[in-house]
Image 1 (cartoon, rainbow, N blue to C red):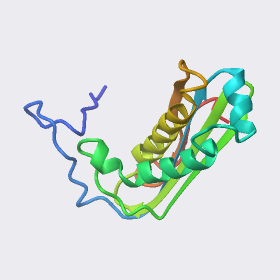
Image 2: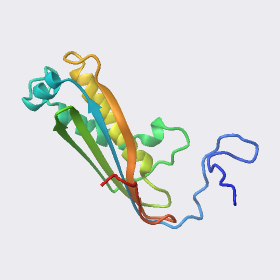
Image 3: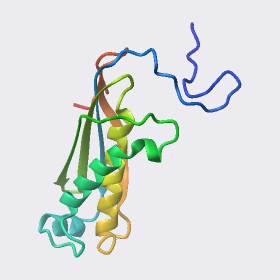
Image 4: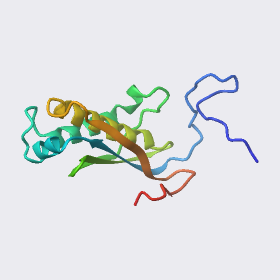
Length: 161
């Protein structure tokens, strides 16, 4: 069995940025999902647009988009990417806010981290906006659910449908 090595670590164990110079430029996309779990009162107030700081879902959507665009500034060794598209969708359910983000790029490396960052930043924004109503809201289940393009082709997380 061939041992898989970490791509962000050199032969001496030091962190490094991966050289993508020889990788093919292709259409790539990634979708991530997560949730903010919060109180029923917070869900009701978000739905009624009755949070003092403003529209929670609209503000979190914008924050997620902005976060995706700044991923390489936030996560060491991520390549800066010229995103072609980022979509952040937020919806309420009985226990909180479900967040899904899809990022697209034409490039030599994937956009998984951009989609994940969008979900995380949108979730943090929801928490910031509702913290006066629910001190214990939390972000959970931030995960990659789909990616395509590049060497690995199309991958879907089992059970994420």
